[in-house]
Image (cartoon, rainbow, N blue to C red; front, side):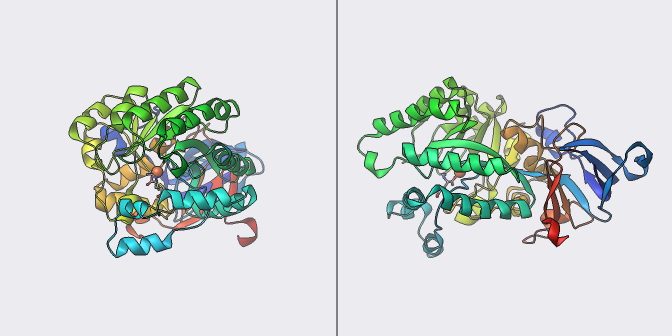
Length: 417
Ligand code: NIG
Ligand code: FE
């Protein structure tokens, strides 16, 4: 047993049995001053004030002294494209000189550039590259990460990417939720036969679902990628195969993805930079969660999604990195928190809920993760600051000093303690 003892602030984000927090509750974090958490195996057994912990009740308790520090539920990144080969620093340079993301894609860069490199990479190489990224995520306090395919865009390579995710997940250092994003772009070999590519994506679904290679199916619903009609077709088939749904919606234009997502009962609708007021209304009446990606607008120097309007309309918000080589080369949820506060006007408490309980909900795991409550998985982060507000305030630094995943300290590695 492990006792994380006497934290200056234990931020529990207690859910009270709810799956997520929306509206005013999006800003309720629940805080215990001088708090402790008892970990038993891979679960949280007890939380409370340090002075109320009864040492006599338990044998063999190993103590982690959290005095002067802040403890939060492990951060949950609900949207990444983490498995890819190569980088695109040259495109970053082009963007700085004035080209847009879409112009670069038309010039032969963008998603297809990474697809070509990822197709050439072996499983082993992809595991090695992705492991490096996962370690960075862990060091920055992320204990669960959603990982999408989408840089294979043919049968063999999409399966290869999902198998890489499966292998990384089996190592158990970090929790992984895999998503099938075969509908990320139409590969050039199908430009003149879009229908055939859509058929190919649909034909992959039964196998992916049967082998549990993905929990979610996602579609990039955007001008130049997949239309609302095509997105609906793919997601409808995915749902029939038992996959839960996500959709990239309204990133570069108000294109109709939100309506499709709500209609099909998507667990989350992601991006929303160009969501309209009428779409906000539709979304607020649904059970879907808005996953906002502050790092993308920051990195592309593009408009931010209307987080305030969404929250005030009662839409539950989660935030993620969207980690990918084109639109957000960052795995830091701490940085996403800062950007969400300063650029999207979310409160510090709202971004904490958005990175924990609500992002767990966006992955359908808020019954086991996303808050510090007895019975939940012992995924915890300890920050070397005395006040949780320091985390987004003192930005560009990682304040993480320890990370527990399933009750095991995975950062820092034992030898560094
Ligand atoms: O979420 N929107 C689609 N896909 C990514 C970008 C992927 C890439 O540029 O490689 C995104 O922004
Ligand atoms: Fe994305």
